[in-house]
Amino acid sequence: MAKNKLKKFAEVATFSNVIQTEIEEVFRIDHPIKGNWHSQFFKNNNPIVLELGCGKGEYTTGLATRYPEKNIIGIDIKGARIWRGASDALQNGLLNAGFLRTRIEHISSVFAKNEVSEIWITFPDPQEKRDRSTKRLTSSLFLPLYKQFLKPNGVIHLKTDNEILYNYTSRLCLFNKLDVQYQTNDLYNSGLNDEPLLLIKTHYEALFTSKGLSIKYIRFTIDNHDTFIEPPNKIG
Image (tube, rainbow, N blue to C red; front, side, top):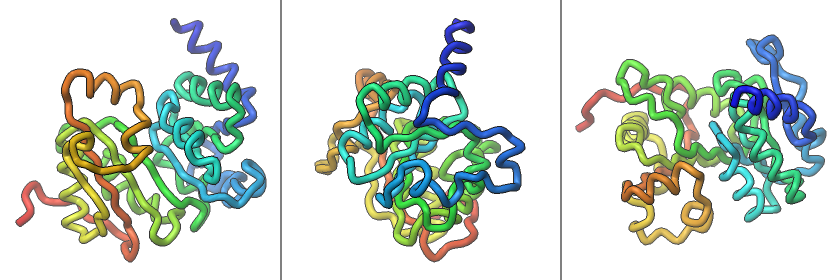
């Protein structure tokens, strides 16, 4: 298993649709690709959409397939995971799919102001313990980073099976008076007719739904906010 991971890690370094960053390239300094995704990587001006914590890239490649008019970038720290999605994208000629290996904490070093139109956060680690709440990808620690490169009216999507993460994000939006465009704690029984939400399923989502777990979803924007505050345990 370890040898297989090392092989994939070595292969992904040769893929034309993958950028890998070293800590010295992104720690408090800008990476050369920042502000140049359109001109140097995709070579078009189509909107850029991110999937954070993309894992094996099922959602990244799914979005790229359904939206050829958009550029989709899957981001994860695990090179062996990215290998699967990047390999599939190359084999299927998905020129609008790219992958970035970096830590989310350094993401503002890789994207410039107004460079990103949309963010998907699909089944991230819920960081269930309260003292780890700021590690959640929808927390007050990460939202200011997204604000640095997300366009005005840019949308953030969260899909999760985890009730703690869903409720936390809902409370954070309420407490900070963010614009919640839609939310449901049971996506597949919500009556919502949205193709990528309903038809693109990650490996883990398929496992969750097969066990009868409901999928939660919330879509919101962070316009008119520069700072964000953690919500109290109870609101109202």
